Length: 189
Picture 1: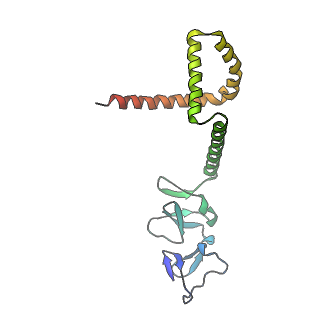
Picture 2: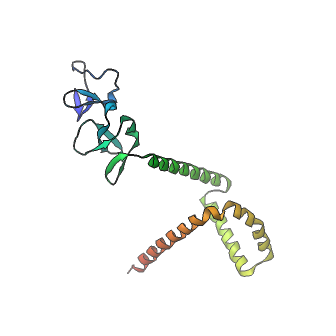
Picture 3: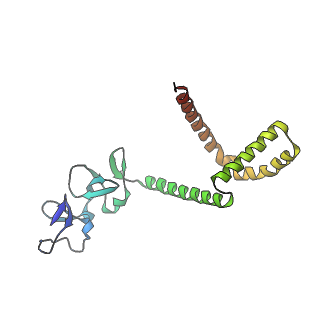
């Protein structure tokens, strides 16, 4: 029989191996004197190995004791080197972030189908900016009519109630990033 700390790695027919009856092998651990079922534990020793968390019935090097049930094993997280069980708030935040990424990805795909690839989007944006420049400078009636026609679509697409906070944050972030950028440029000898 071969163990990795308290985890059964392999055994053969000649080994005297009597696991708890009806217990899956992934829950069985050797406590030094007998086989135990992690389902019965309310606290376990958890080891982070790569992207995985390994559960132990007793202390081993590089392990942290975590108050948890077997059912919590898929809810483990590491934050600042501390292993713990995700709270319902953590899970809700993760679920919301996953949904946000799915929705954003869906929009990106739809925009690409309807508007075109990045080059096409940049070209259309550039055309709009040029139209705004011409209008601001010359105020031709044809552009005034065009802008009057698209203003309702702009207001529907980008309602201020949804975009105000986003734009404020974006502009503050851009200000910080550009100041760092300018300072870095000015620091070039």
